[in-house]
Image 1 (cartoon, rainbow, N blue to C red):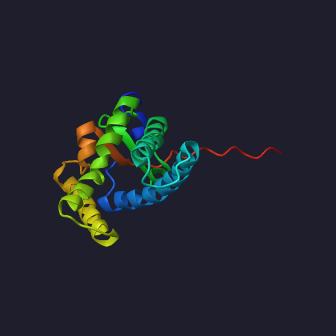
Image 2: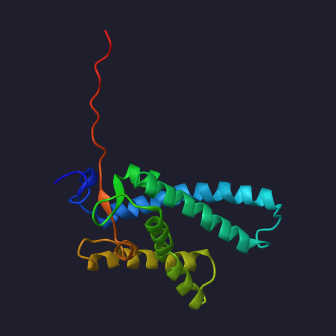
Image 3: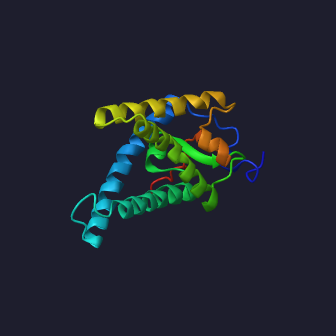
Length: 181
C-alpha cells in the first residue's frame, strides 16, 4: 500500500484498548488542569477579576477557547497531545490521514460529550457537593467509554461522528548516525 493511501501506516493500526484510552484521558486531565490554571490566572489579571463568580461566563468562554486551541493545534500538527504521545495514541481520520482544522474543531466540540451530559444529569438530579457530582460525572464517563464496545472498531461516539479514530502508534525508529572520528 502506498504512503498516500496509508500515511504513516495508520489505516491498519490497531485501536488501543479502552483502559489505555481512559488512562490517557486521566493524564490529559492533569495536563489540562495546568493549562486551565494558567489561562484562568491570565484572564483574571487581564480583566481584573476579583471574585470567581463575577464574570464567570466570560472566563468559561475564554477557557473553552484556550482548551480548543490546545487540542485542535495538537491534533492538526501531529495527531497527538502530550498525553496521547505518552500513551502512544494518535488521532487520524478513518482513512488514516491527519486531521484538518475543521474536523479537529468538530471533534473538540463533540468530545465535550465526555463531561457535559454527566454534569447535566447531576444538575437534573439536584446533586450538590463535590462527592455526589463527581460520582455522577465518573459514572457518565465510564458509561460513555463503555459505549465504544458498540462500535465495530471500538471507537468513541464523538470519533464515529467525526469520522476519526484513535490508533496505537509508535514513532518510527530513526537511524542513529555514527559518531564522527
